[in-house]
Length: 448
Image (cartoon, rainbow, N blue to C red):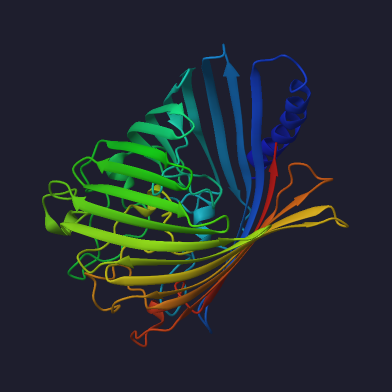
């Protein structure tokens, strides 16, 4: 069963050695990739079921430059389930299965022990200030992105254009026709990709019915980044999902001094046509619009920084964005949870980032510490709380290590603890995999 995984590991190591040799030759081809072994566990409260999973795999990417302008590339992604626990077995009390661990494999077929995907296959052209890429690729936007916190990231298929006339201006345009959501094994049309992850409740409290019922064929993306003088930046994004919704996002930052920086953000979403389906019970985007506003203040030190962030989702409508498509890079984002699906939400988060070099060990540790509080409306109000989350406190420690003697080896340890502190029914369904729980991740990355 694990023969494909062993073959992949062997190829990864042998091709890594070959790529290091080719770096010293005038070849136009470059080989890169990653071998990743990922252990994850969720420790739930009391007698509620605990979950464990381990995966190994990664990706191999090859790019060939025909000239200074033309290039072609491809990447192969894979994940093998080492099956330390049967994730199809549910908790006896609630009937709930794993929430986080299934993301190491194919969320649409958790019984498949080995998945693979040709995730990238593109043709690129660059000339002066212009760059265009056509095919399968990674993209990075505030909400549509690789969200590379599992084994296989989110990938898209389409065309992406970039214009950089100088150091202070950066423009992007993209048209996307298909998406391979993180932790899946194929590319989907836009509409059918919405709902592969848990769908929660609709605004009247019934199970959402939009899986396989969203009518959408295209995503259009536009962005503009500007440096407005020496101290101020402005980033503007617009993401249009055909027949479903439009998201307009703006972020601006200002350097108050060499150490202090202030930033603000605003996300405005509005429904397009019928939000995905003319039948209310089958549509994705029900509210006419939603708004998120936020601010962040950062204090920079020599090898660390401290910041305090706040985001408010107004009560006008639920902030919605398909969880299948990416991580939400709002100021208040913390790994292993989302703000998506809620309205009337307040989030306050403190972050502390350190970058420490231990000379005796010849080891560098980058650490991201965070502590946050999310105040949510009632779990019994589905119009404001799609996934029935209580208010909760959230604590993260995310540590990355680099070793002088082990080039390319970059392990990560992520420890998350969440505790419910709001009013919610005395029912374990409101707790399991949501709050009063630990989520621990040990990721061994070898990059070449």
